[in-house]
Amino acid sequence: MKRVLKILGILIGLLALCIGGFAAYIAVKGIPTYDVNIPPDVASLKAPRDSAYIDRGAKIATLLCNECHRGSDGKLTGKILPDIPEEFGTIASYNITHDEVHGIGTWTDGELYYFLRTGLRKDGTYAPPYMPKFPLMADEDIYSIIAWLHSDEPSLAPDTRENPPNKPNFLIKFLCNMVFKPLPLPEKTITIPDTTDEVAFGRYVADALCACYGCHSADFKTMNELIPEKSEGFYGGGNPLINMERVLVPSANITMDKETGIGNWTQQQFYEAVKFGKNPRGGPLYYPMFPHTTLSDKEVNAIWAYLQTVPPIRNEVARYKARE
Figure 1: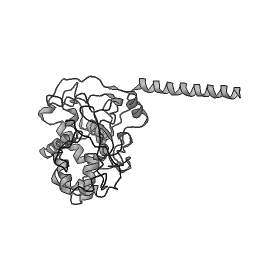
Figure 2: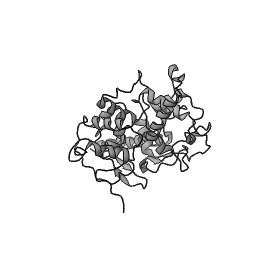
Figure 3: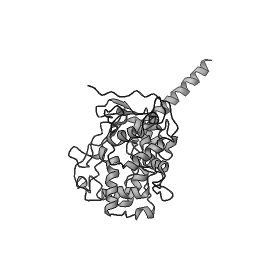
Figure 4: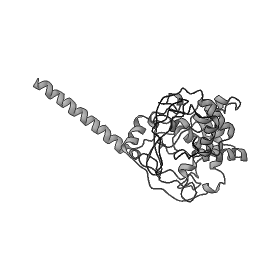
């Protein structure tokens, strides 16, 4: 028996040593880098630069980019992100102005396309999950973002500002090495669905364009960017989000469950919540939810039509109450 216990103790010790060594390896390695192999057709990409694409890109940027990348002076020089959970570390968004040293002034259209799709920067560094990837977005909309990024928009004018280096904690290093990986490029062109098919168009706007499910499902760590409906708690809310005061604000259940979701809301109430940040009682919705004023009426109504088709989830979410 003593020999068995001795062997067991040795095995446990070796296991602990292996776990400790692996943890040390992850801590030292940090966020992983990968070889960048941009296909020739992507590398040579030239996105259209006409006003329609730039205007569309500006609209998408208002929805997806500006909130995180806008500095205190309105320029898109990046900033420390106060709403990143502490277990991820201290994280700053990147300078995306035209500056060639500190911004993206030397990035080609193909490099931007590859990054937005896969999450790999031109130097091979992987963008952790707090930077969205857009594997399901239509090519036309990706081109619009690129056109806008290369436009004469004043907030994108070259700026030499450099943010403090990111200090990711062990959890995000572990997740980026073991769970989250670069996404594949689409195998074929992705198009925007026919806008007369409200459900299909609403699915595109909600899942592919705005990625609403990311916040409104159970947890960022279990979201599925390639097949959103496989995300844990799809649209059932409860994701532990953080506001600007670093207070926990669980995301709302926006399935059509009548008791814990929005099954008793009217379409007009949903419209006012999304467009103007107004709850059904007439009060404001609080950050991280903000008014999506650049979404068209057709887009908001299509999201509503799509959410009618999402399976209801019974999930009572403790609602945030602002301090008086």
